[in-house]
Image 1 (spheres, rainbow over the protein chains, first blue to last red):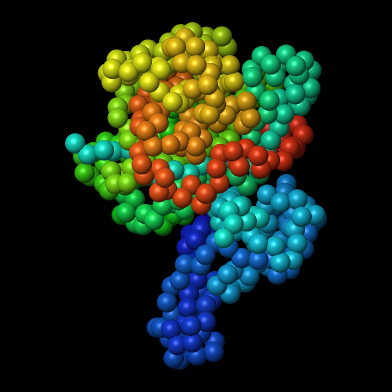
Image 2 (image 1 turned 60 degrees about the horizontal axis):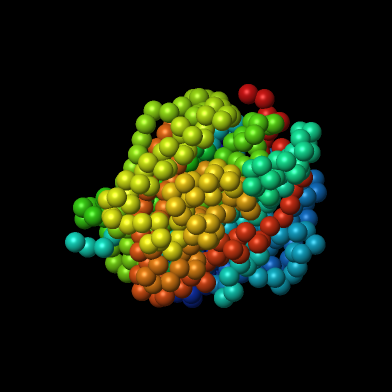
Length: 139
Length: 349
């Protein structure tokens, strides 16, 4: 049975796969996820928001370890969830993978990786997107 | 005639490993006999959030990180695998979107047991040669299945590699390729079934060895070469023993095979096997090196390639993506219970 989440995930593919945010043409502030208008420039930003592909790198601002996970993520617990500041400025919430729980540190450099986020049971669609892992290649 | 070949490459191997001895212990087998008999020390295991789509995307992004090719100029993506996440819904669509190559793009998923990746290379070559596309991307990746307790469980692992095929700044020219195919049911998975079945010892002489040796000889005859003309030889590696044996049968030394033989450390990555073997060779190759590659896919067929590394290999910043040696080194062991959870072995059909 197809589920109602398919169109919602499909609409968000650019953000989830490639961290596509946008930038206000008036004040240059960058947003992720993208916004319809800039809350600072308001009318001046209308029709003036430019798409921008954010880089894959950032650092951990803060994190927590999830021990009691929501049902679709039960098999993965315990796992870290972090707020990551991308090098361009915006902050995203994401799971940290390929890292021991005790090795997750505030300030650590991370890069995005493409992973399965959740699936709609055994017959529904599979949804992919970003998670973050420790930086592999320096730079 | 223009040179066609590999312009860039990238690979991905999941970080989790399970030791052959741990699987043997779980099933009451002698760990020493199993490990030595198969020549596999440990194998890679996909984590719960990894599948052929995620491995393919990571490999494709690694290939793009090493070059300055605009993803929009990649006009074809072929993903070879026998463990595509969907039976219907191409993995290549997910890869195309994730690397920014959509929407003016030709995509198809391939399946030919362990040789679907090399079939993808051949298709991309033909497209480039006929000027239908500028660049094509060929991927071979698998998170291969094995029934609990089956002999395949010691080998079936996860990994893959992506190759960008083109005709400009080619780092390895593909001089010649040929294929050898027959109807030989040595290994199969029926529609809708979760695990494959195989013909046991029948997978050896009439299947793996016949197809690889026949095709390798046809290729060497075509190009007029001898085993000693090659610096590296890569053979399909369902275990650690077969590739060394087939190399010896053909007159290649174990030194020629070593760099491309990864099965002892990561297991059999099926469609990814010769692909990551080739990536491992390209990690260290120098201009002028000649590479011999022969894949094998059950069912059965073999694709063979004769390649020459060019001066452009020195201009490719190989350090911009993880080398195979780094991917092998970056590992974390899991026990058999965790493995069953991650591989979804407890789910009843």
